Length: 320
Image (cartoon, rainbow, N blue to C red):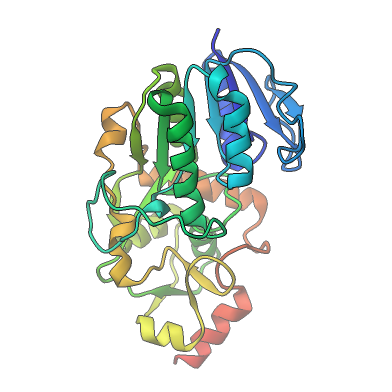
C-alpha cells in the first residue's frame, strides 16, 4: 500500500487530493492544524503547527509520496529538512503565476520565471519554493503548476461568481470579451492527476492547465448551463476602470477579467499535462458542477471576489 503524506489536506484543494489518494487505495495522512476543517473520511489527520518545533515528529518513517501544498518559505524549507530524505517521491503544488511574462499565448514550462526577490509576493514565494524543493529532492520531484483551479467548494469566487450571478438573471455586467480567454482546471481533475503522477513517480515540471476557451464562448456556455434569459451588459476596460472595478479577483472585481496584455496567462501550453496522463473534463461539466455547488451554498452569499449586488447596480447606473 502506498503511504501518502499530505502537508495540508483539510483545505479545499488539499481535501480533494486527500480524497483522490484515499480512493486510489493509499494510506493517507494529512499534517495540518486542521483549522480549515476535518480531514476527509478514511484519512488520518495529524494536527500540528508547522511553524512550531517538532512539527514533524508525529509523522515518522518512510513515505512513498509527500505532497506539499504550501509555498511560504517558513513552511516549505523545514518540511524539506524533516522529510526529504524519507520520501521516495515529492510533489510540490506551484502555480503558473511563477512566469515572468504573460503576453505570449502558448508558452510552455521553459518560459522565464520571476526573480524570487520578495518572498512576501505570491509568485516570488512559489519560485523560491520550487528552487528549495529542487535543491533538496532533485530527481524525485514533481512540480505541478496549475492554472486557475475551479469547481465545487472554491472559496475564492474567481469562477463560481459567474454561474451564480447568471442564475439570478436580470441585467448582468460583464467585461468586453474581445481577445480574452478562459483556461481553468477542475479541482478534481487536478487532484486525481497529482495522485496518479505520484504513483508513477513522475519527475517533471508541468503546467496543469485545462483547455483554452474564448471569454465570449465561456459566457455563451455559462448562459446555457444556467438557463440565463437576461441581458449581458458589456463595457470596455476604460469604462470599468473609471468606475473602480478591479481586474481578476478580490473586492469590487470582475472575475476572469484580465488586461488584454496578459492574454497569455489564460493560454498556457498544457500538452505536458495531457502527455503525463492528465484528464480535462468539459467546461460545461465543470460549470454544471459549480452551479450546483453555488445553489447549495447560496447565490447571494458574501463573496471573496466580484461585485456585490449593490456595486453592480451602481456601475450599471453610472454607465448608462
